[in-house]
Image (cartoon, rainbow, N blue to C red; front, top):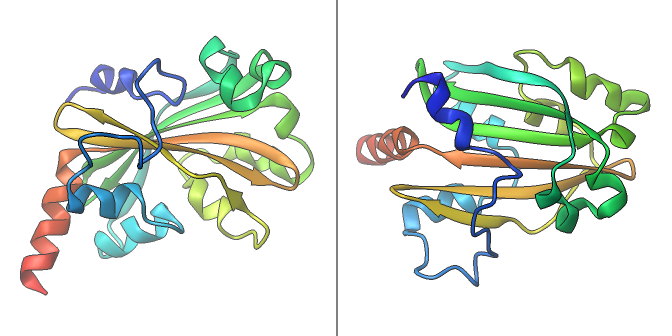
Length: 181
């Protein structure tokens, strides 16, 4: 896939996002392992890649809030400027996850200003260091032969939206590790 093929993987995409219970047909078991796993995706990918993990930034910068985020953030926040960051999370040099985060400008205050300066560091590495991090229940979506999830995270009274689209290559890696275990 070329970089432009990843442009459709957006947290604010007009896709049929649903709670896992409402999605039919259900995601296959191996996909549910990715979609419904609690905790840090970054940490799981680092383990799955035996430390050969890298964040490739596709683009980041300030964007105008999108109408599709009103239901998520509410009208006041959804119409603000947002920090948009699209990345590929890669293991062994291959894209495993296309991720997109949207952070309202009102959430980028105090120590959370670091969120706009991550560069090629993983967002999960920052978020999951905080013991008071709270994550809303995920929504999932099927995109052809792969799946995605998105969740709102709450930290220090501020919210941000993170979408992760699990690419088929990650399933191959999981299956390979399961066979060799």
